[in-house]
Image 1 (cartoon, rainbow, N blue to C red):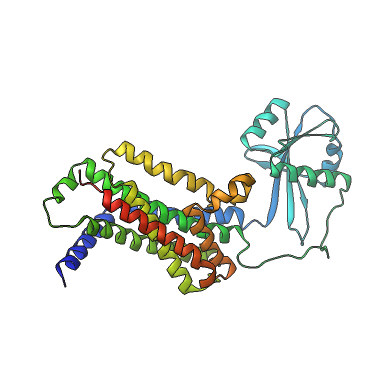
Image 2: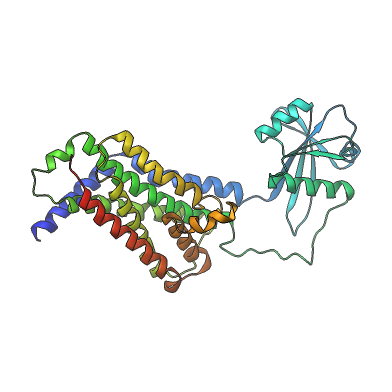
Length: 365
């Protein structure tokens, strides 16, 4: 083993042991993403029926009053009396309307807190809700149709065909996004912040006197984070497969190569961010300036198609968006080498350019 190889190996082992001694790294990197996927998966994937909450203003006679006496069932929820109206539909799924009688001021507060979806007043002819809220719009349309046709219960609709393909569920959309987000955070904070912290504590100054090359030091840091990212992604996907039956529909080899290209991209960005900064406050701001916009814009938890049309073209070329979209193509659309070749090349090139620039501008103190 040559001196340079031995040096790199020792640096890798040292950094790896240092990482394992931090319980917070294991929790936030491995356990936390699993908890998020399970929680959001259960919230958005496993619903057996749609639940809508409606407030009826007390003291006003509405058309709903007589209908609820016929079709509603009174229950106690959280110490309050509510009326449940359940609609059975084997095609579109069951619907449960939960009606609560409130004073106007209380209904407004409940609407602000998200405890109710809309407010009904004046003979059921007036509905009060935020017109920009798609959930409230859906409740309005379903409730108004129900009032006009109280017997609206169906077993089948020949015009509707249920689509139960793997890859169309929210959990299938979420898991690749969480893998991408975890990889980016792991590299930005695990590499950039680690270097900045050691520089601020004057620990890097001591390394100048050694024959250690700065490129070896940075490669060792990146290699440790790459191993951790592989473990984190594997654990997250395992639990998604175990709890929700998620599968990888695309080419496994293409997935491995694409995953490596994503690590290369964000490793280079991390080195560039941490190459000169000596203050933790500045480093924290720089990392967040890169991390936060991509976390919000790149469609991790919801589709970036919800943003204005003029911004979509820009969002698609963000590194995290390229990586997340590529993972989803492989996981959910059966993509192979051809589909991820271009984004892999772009991500790898970005990472190499940033790494070379970061090493060139790197300072020990």
